Length: 144
Length: 120
Image 1 (tube, one colour):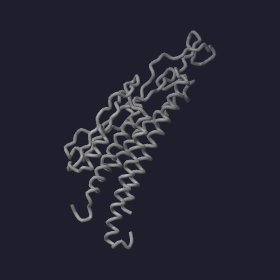
Image 2 (tube, each protein chain N blue to C red):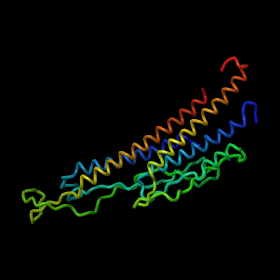
Image 3 (spheres, chains in turn green, cyan):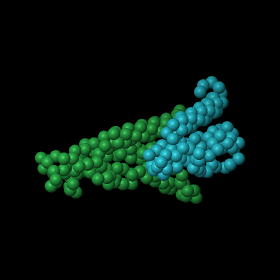
Image 4 (cartoon, rainbow over the protein chains, first blue to last red):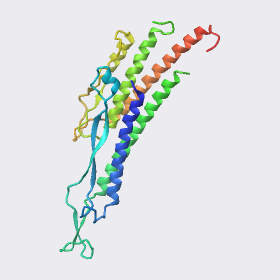
C-alpha cells in the first residue's frame, strides 16, 4: 500500500480546486469587460470536474486491474451560454445601434458562493494531506 | 515464524495495510467532493475485516472498495458528505496510530530481550 500515492491523490484535488478559484477570480475581474479577442463581451467561465482512475502498476501486476481510488482533474473550462446583460449606455464606444451595451452575465453572489465552495474543498483536502503526512511520519517512527 | 516476529506483529501489519488502504479511499472521496456524479466508496465491513486480519487466516489482504448506499445525494448526482469523510479520516488515523504504537511496543520488547533487559 502506497502512502505517497495518497499525497498525489489529494494533490490533484488541491490543484483542481485552485483552478476553480482562479476561474472565479477571472470572472469577477472581468465583470465589466465588453471587449474580448473572440469579439463581444467576456463570457463567464466554469470548470468541469471529472473523476480519473489512477492506474497503479503494482496492482495491475498483482492481477488487481480493478483500481478503486480516483483522483480528480479539470476536464474542461467551458463558457456560460447565457445571453449577456444589455444596458442602455448610448455614449459607450461598444454600444449597438439602439444604444445598448452587452455586459458579461456575471453574478457576484454566484461567484462568491463558488469561491467559498472551492476554498472549503481546498481546506478539506489540505487536512487530508496533513493526515497522510502524519501517517507517513508514524511509519518512519517505527525505525527509531 | 522467525525469532523476531511475534503473531501479534502480523496482525498489526495487516491492520496498518487496511488503514492505509482505507485512508486512500477516503482521500479519493474527499478529492471528488465536487465531481458531478461521483459516488462515495468505502471498505465495506471494516471492523469485521480487522478481526479477520488479526485472526491471520488470509495470506494477504485484497484491497476492494465498494459504493456506499443510503447517503443523501445532491442534485448533481454526487453523494460525498464532507462531515462523514472527515470523521472517518480522523477515526482511521487514530486506528493507524494505535497499531503503530503496539508495533513499536513489540519491537521494544524484543530489543529489551536481546539486551537482557538492561536497556532499550
